[in-house]
Amino acid sequence: MVSSPLSRQRISNTATSVFLLASVLFTASARSSETKPVATFSIVAIDPETGEIGVAVQSKIVGVGAIVPFAKAGVGAVATQSYANTGYGPLGLLAFESDLDAAATIELLTRDDPLKSTRQVGVISANGDAASFTGADCHEWAGGKTGENYAVQGNILAGPEVIEAMTEAFENAKGVLAERLLAALAAGQEAGGDQRGRQSASLLIVRSNWGYGGVSDRFRDVRVDDHPTPIAELERVYRLHRDLFPRPK
Image (tube, rainbow, N blue to C red):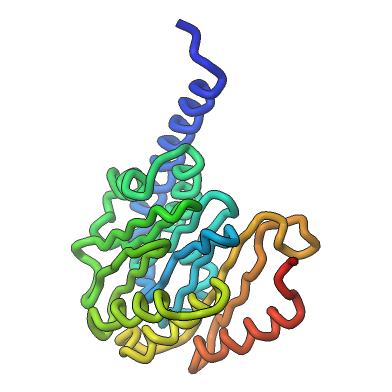
């Protein structure tokens, strides 16, 4: 029987996923002694009305925006943290492009990872299917929660109240997706945040053709790499970006 072009493409995508997974996890295992923990809290979410997909994160580590958030317009978002495996980002997005759901994507990412017990990851697809994973060896307090169109997760937190505050804030906040994500971060910090303190924060929003010049999908990509109050500073930078680059009509 001759397979269809679509079937061959799915087979190709699956083979690519397996290859990338093996490569990423081999590298992660070999360099595990060099990895620093990304103690943090994050949220991945979508706006089903506008098609925006976003990630917001705060951590007691410099430059968290270069480690945790990954997103692709029309596909989904990934937040990889704790002893973060940054290979989870592109591989998770590839899994969504290959029609895996959120639970299957988490399974693909963690299944053969020798350090899975130290990982934490949240994923969401463009249709709002979300999942969160916390390895058994993540530093306490660690955990996550999913709801309609979002997933929240964190580690080395003051307690579960941080996650609860973030979910409540996101669900009740008004405004565009970026503002709801920032509200979730602020609420998490107000509830105790990261036990170790504050240092950096990041906001990433993607939407097809909403990026600079209308030729990319990175609509909002603002970061605070080192600041005593990174979330407040991130909100300030976001407002500057919003005023300079208003939402397309």
